[in-house]
Image (cartoon, rainbow, N blue to C red; front, side):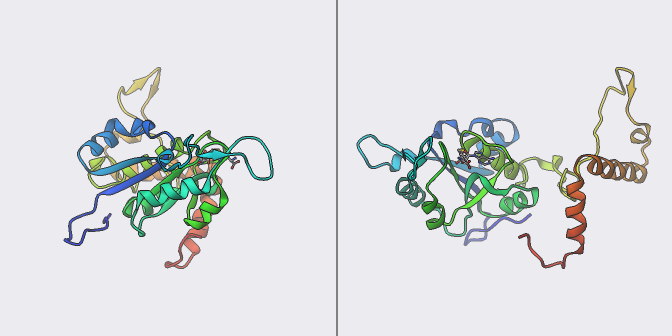
Length: 251
Ligand code: SAH
């Protein structure tokens, strides 16, 4: 994977800029394990910006009641737009809004985002954000699944984590990319490790055979069977994908 380069040809650091009412939540889970080590060593960068810093009134209010009535509160367009503008991100960076109304996040979108300069990510709260700022700042709504969280931060963690593990040097050879769930429109085959026998169950013999071709064929067949049983929708999408002309893009 090639990352965007600086003018001098050096590689630009992949960066996530998160706009949130709770900057103290970051780096949180992204500060530990491989992502955390990679963050500490500068393989990627994270900025958490406080939306409230852009509030202008005496009470530093960021939300107000929904126009037209109804429960809850809505994040104000003016405050959020000011926060986005203050983050001053370059125009080539994707501007995402975590939102249950968005297009569901997929591994292929994650690969795309990881290959770019890194996104600006707006985290909603309350009932969501004023529609006008979504349009005026051209935010791309991204969902992490068909359920409703109380805020965009946990969704942002999921998205950033999925991207960071693909960055060169973060997981070393651990991530082959090619083998993982979704990489070929299939779920991953089952994995085993020691002990050779667990509660009476041995590791499938073929995996101990040392015959790489047979192991590969077994894994392929297991992946296909698992996908057929659990996610037949992926197989349908895969067949459609193979029929598409090569230069077609998602959408
Ligand atoms: N009333 C809104 C939900 C608001 S939930 C609706 O029905 O669409 C509050 C915030 O949590 C959202 O603005 C969004 O930033 C975040 N959020 C909730 N569920 C999410 C999901 N499935 N994917 C991504 N972000 C989500």
